[in-house]
Length: 455
Image (cartoon, rainbow, N blue to C red; front, side):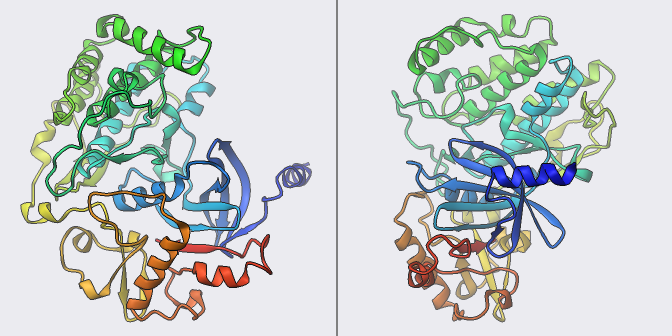
């Protein structure tokens, strides 16, 4: 019976069983959307998630997502393994994670999470965003679908996904915010978007955090007041959701729940565009709520009630080490910081590097923190994974041939023979577009006709 189901699935999806980059065998389709599809895959008895973005769509976001995720390299993000191209798709290979919080919530029989569960989720969401924001990036699409739990030993931690809409909100050199612009189209999901985002203002850190508040209230209430409003079109929907959010006070929204949730909504709604959020204050709201109930941050979830000692280590762009370990009652998070100012001025958005040591390429994920944050890497041995971008400009819609030419030139400068078997160049390799062009006539529809940059 099981074999019959596998055969049916393979017949329905011709990509099942296909090899991506001659390595990753597609096993199962996990989902699809306007961007394309996502599959589980296997290579050398390890499992991965592979995103396939259709090249026919108008706006390509997958390369942008790969670049941002590799730049962030956070313990709260899936590890990016490779990014590349085929004749029909842009392809991102990354660590396979568990179910999204939205899927778990939909499957949960009570359709509401407990306060204890939501506080454990909220604490991690704010901590994750603090790390991302300190590296000059905002997510801009905070919603339950974009938060997942890990697999196996990582199942007790929350992770964040989908950076296709993320962007820089300030200069990484001067820390000056980019100008706020009015009358922009909404970027993100209307149900959870901030009032300012729905009103057309350029987003900043405050908008990510306000959206987290609405996600948490969705988990607590089971439904938000602006869900299910009858509308005729998308524009009317956005307008009515914005009006309903604006007229719904934090007190009404959080009625029946600990006052700390009201404080969270009021605080994030009142942040100004450039104001730096007090992340410790927001996290302490969740700690206080749990303390009042006799609990602490212990990764308790309603669907998995086993508790653990919470321990997660983040390193931010400002050279800040944060280790959140054994958080107990009345823990004051501000005491867990130290700042290395010498590392502060060197942060740039294009700090995604591969390192060439004796013709062996080590992946970006294996570069030590000292090399990534400091200046110990030899400039002659550095090559940019996706080209040498200016520090304050992210333009991911470049002409494909220009981009591949830039990557090729970067590799040539480092005396790497691209004609060698890519398997012999460590575990990272690239198949150039130049080779693809020569083979395109013969291999138009061949899956091996691809280009891969391994991180």
